[in-house]
Length: 302
Picture 1 (cartoon, rainbow, N blue to C red):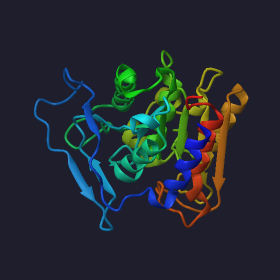
Picture 2 (cartoon, one colour):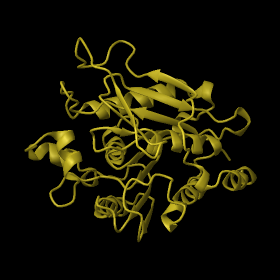
Picture 3 (cartoon, helix red, strand yellow):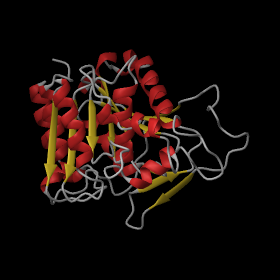
Picture 4 (cartoon, rainbow, N blue to C red):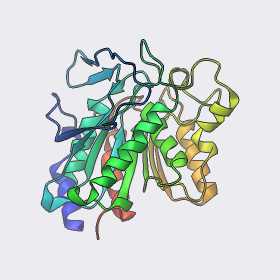
């Protein structure tokens, strides 16, 4: 296992992880084969837009949530899987930079990377409400665990990862899916808290609506719900991020109080939304640090 991981980190350098053009996905599954809860009788088309620089597609108006699975080569599978929640302020999804780029990198490490295309709580013309993203995430875990044997995955080694508002979803899953929690949590420049002065305002309003009641603000401030049963976590943030670094620090502090292992990396520069695409800065090395952490915590087969 040690030899494989070292080779992977050499052959798949961070600067090559971000593709200039989206590549075909391995396989895509609908999360709700019997019908999406709360979906209107007639749904408007999903919107896919690419940024001018290319290779940075954003998806919005999601009415049919899916899980796109990138499988490692059979001889390299480690038994681990990660459900990846792209960010986008709960208004859209950065599906390449914070989704498929990451999943392909995981597959190169022998890890199943599964990109969750989840419903936005309040797309134009319809309101799903704040339960929809978490419900989609729960279904994604059910799907991966159902296919675990076929994909060479240990059902006890399925983790969750999220970026920005996707980080909020990943943290919510880690503290709210109590019956079958993720094995581990990976948060990259996450929104964690909904508390005034800490939360990202746009993400909070898109998820909970304007003037959200205190009980919802409390429920979706994940740092308030960490216990000894919360999964171990790996966190990355920069001090110049407009999504305040206190989101990551508060979650790490709660893990510390609860006695849950974690690793927190705070870098000076990088801003927000860089995914794996800042090899020119120290923060660009976070995937290598993550791979080492996952190996040290034995999320790979021995």
